[in-house]
Each structure stands twice: as C-alpha cells, then as structure tokens.
Length: 165
Image (cartoon, rainbow, N blue to C red):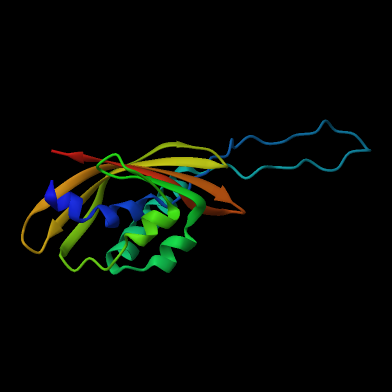
C-alpha cells in the first residue's frame, strides 16, 4: 500500500486522454439534379483510436514519471478530475501540483488495455498500471481513463485508480 501511495501523484497523471467513435455509416442523399453529390463519412476505426489512446496514456505516464507537468497540462482538459487510489478527488490544479520526478521507480507498464467504449466525441480506456520500485517492491492499480475529442485531438478528462491487492 505504501508503494502505491508513494506513486499516487504519478498515477494521477495517467488519466489525461480521449477517444472517439464514428458510426462508419455513409451519409447518402437521394439522387436529384438539385442536390450535391453523395457525401461519405470516414468510417470510425476503434483499433486506431485504441492505439492512439494507448500511446497517449503511455506518454502521460512517462511524463508523470519525469515530472513533466507541461506535457500533462497540455493533454488534459481544463476540468480534468482525478480520483486517486485513496478515493480522493482532485481537480487539475491539485493533481498537477502533486507531480514530481519519480526517482524511486525502476519501471512501469500498462497492461490489459481495453477500449471500453468509444464514439466520435468521447472514449473510455481501461488498463492495469504496474509499477516496480528500485527497492524491488511492486504494485498494481486498475485505471479507468475518460477522454474527450476536442477539435480532432484527444484529451484526458478524468482518471480513476483502484489498488489491486
């Protein structure tokens, strides 16, 4: 428990990503001399969104480990909210204020990554955050990130973490 409490600020930053889902349906108009040609909507690619969000979650985790507050601030919404492993709710400013370089971490990995839901405007990514300290201690937290798509760019809106014992 002390391990995960020590890295709670690190884990808070993992929440900052967004997903989108498109219907993939074509928008069609009935043929008429008064209407424009048929418009086709680009199909929504959940696999591509999962990959993009996974990369963003990894980048945010790396930034948190390095103490890179600027990267995290730029990839989270203004109303970002973190629910840490102790159930404490933090707004963006409070979450960012707790981020510092984590010198005690030997390694971390995101595993069991699942795109729980996605549409063009929002997405939910679930994964396991695995952390190993230089002392050899390790811990895991189930993490749920909610993302929104703003102007074609995914941003982390919220993150919730639960310690796995």
